[in-house]
Amino acid sequence: MDATSSASWTPNLPGSHPSLSPFFKSGRISYHHVDIRYRSPSPLLLSLALPPFFHVDPTASALQLRPASSSDFHRFHLLLVQSTRNLISACRECGVQRLVYVGSADVLVGGESEVFCFDESVAYPEKYVDGLNELRAQTEAIVLGSNRMNGLLTCALRVSNPFGPSDDKLVPTLVKGAKEGWTKFIVGSGENLWDFTYIANVVHASIFAERALRLRTPYVDGRPFFITNKEPVKFWSFLSSILEGLGYQRMALH
Image 1 (cartoon, helix red, strand yellow):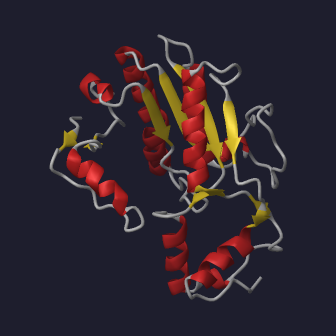
Image 2 (cartoon, one colour; image 1 turned 120 degrees about the horizontal axis):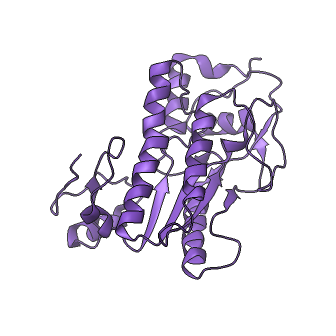
Image 3 (tube, helix red, strand yellow; image 1 turned 120 degrees about the vertical axis):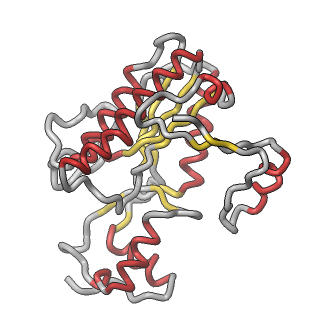
C-alpha cells in the first residue's frame, strides 16, 4: 500500500508534549502512515528513516486483548509476524544497518502459572497457551534471526507492560472497566507480582540499544534484553492505585 504523508499535516499531539509541535511545523519531524501487513514499505519511505530503525510491538500492553478466534489469530499474525517479515525484507533491500525491536517480555510466558526471575538465557517455551505470546515470540525470533543479513544488525528489547503519558490501552481500559463496574473485583489472592515499565525507561533503553549497535558493542546484536523498572509490584494494587488516582474506587472484592 502507498504511504500517505503531508508536509503541512500536524499530528494531534498529547497535551503533555507540546514541545514537539514546532518540530513538525518546521519539517524537522515528518509523519508517514503506511500499512505494512500485506507488503513491504517502499524504499523511498525507508530511506527517510535511515540510519537506525525502531520497530515497536503494537500489542505491548498489560490489558491487550487476546485472539479469541481463528480470524482474530489471523489478524494478529498479520499485525505482528507478517508485518515484521515485510519490514525486515525492506530493510535488507534498502541497506538499513540497525534495527531495534521493542517487543514484549511475555515471549517467555508459555503455560506456566508463574514466571519469576527469568533472564535472557531462558529459551522460548515449547508450547504456548496464549496465542498472542506465541506470535510475539515468532516476531522476536524473526528480528533476531535476521541479524547480520545484508549488513543489518538487530536486537530486541523485552519490555514488561509499558505505562506512562499518552497511554492508550492500560488507563483507558481501566477507566472503561470502572465505569462499567467490573474493576471492583480482584481475581485470585491479589498477591501476584508483575513488572511494569515507565515509558521513559523504554525510550532510554531504545536509545542505548541503537547506540550499542552503532558502536558494535560486543554481545548486543542478535540478542534480546529484558527492560523493566526493576520494581515488581502487586498487579492488582498497581491497577488500584491508578484507579484511585483518577477518582475511582480501589479494587477490593475477591
